Length: 251
Length: 371
Image 1 (cartoon, rainbow over the protein chains, first blue to last red):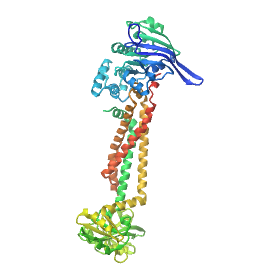
Image 2: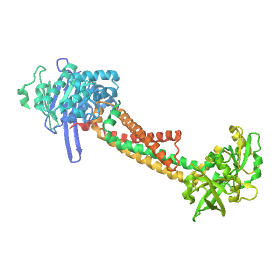
Image 3: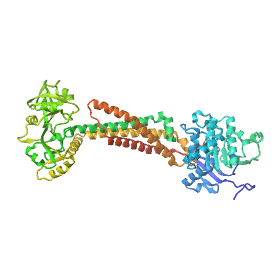
Image 4: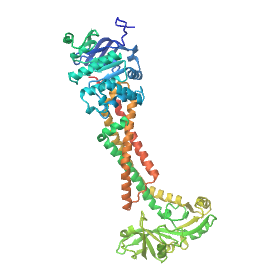
């Protein structure tokens, strides 16, 4: 077993991850021997310039994109030695995702977008799905918007619905790819705080990929990826409050 | 409301072509088949509208309008305990020479005319029968006047060299090949000139209609080479003969199949495009581990709703067009089993289109959502 020295076991541990795209002479190495450990109850931020391999690392860690080499242990399960079906089941049981595009079904209300996940994943029946959905919409400040469709919601509200969709299963892991990129800072701050609360209050392991350094004061740990190499991992004290510009300035 | 139905309603503009295509297919199938049934039912009018239960004709007679002379003495064959009435029946084609020139093929139908006669069609009233008892008088369908080149009851024309007089009209008895001329057996013989003591058919009526098949079975076992049928059997035989001989059924069937194909292709395209437009949303669900079959079920549910709405849209139009067709003289029959068949085939087409549209779900790839 691994731990952070304080007795906490990492929920996600990856090492030796490499990933190359392209064929022949046109080859791009997205990940070069990347190793990382993530802990429960922590909101981790993965930063880096465009094309540095952030999203590829997130995909490899979350079971969406098979790396060329390396291993990923999530809750002690080697996800890349699982079959496709097993991996799908693992994601169903343990993973939530947030993407930059909200990717909400245009015809469905905020409530239906969330209910659908619970009902289609077989996690709960109709009644329980409704209760859990309304509870999380309330938590997200969307109780009054439950019956609105995406075109009736602002960008921030849509992203909050997308967060609700990712968290409604109460997953062990939540992977977010540029969740604030399409939002102004006010809404971006709301989103990162919601994710932080999900980590701290819900005990989830959350990894956010972003390039906005203003997020740094809101997270527990910061990783930096450049040219496919995880050059440094900055562990931040959990007590650090928002507005720590000294660390933010490093980025 | 299900998610698929909610999507269908919200994006109704997108799904409308599919709904219309399915509706059009259903309409085409129902009306084509209804026309086909109506068309073939015309060929067996002399059987269906008479009161006879048993028909005896020339060996291997293919259809009621293609009878050949048989000895009138065969009437004795029907002297059976179950049979209460036996009558001769004349039927055959002839040429009608219009008063102002020109010729028209006609189908001469000569039957007994008495009050208990079993040969005449039901549309012939007692008045008609009385008038027809006059030699060389005929009754025609009122819709055939222009075809026959006459303008009113009382007009004369020539049939196979004999002068006939139109003494009355009936409604709803248009013929497929040529207008029916209803007359007495005697007038029929005078016009068709069969060999002496020969008629075209011999009809029988049983005390109990249910005995007809038993009598027919008995007659078929006789050494004489005759064809004996129940009225229903001969009616079906006549319809099938024309269906196969004229290839009309094949033509109408092909047209219906074409309509079905167009419906299937448009529905498939609609569902495929609609699913492809939601690939990113489906990809998020795939990332969340929702199995692909749940999404497939949604696409199939959408195809079901498209089918159902298309059918609901088609039904009133089918009824209106069938009514207009009947008013215009084209007989359209829509029995319950035709409705069931048309709706089943249409719904199956919509669902198959949905199954084909599932191909688009293969494009769902969660990793593509990452930038």
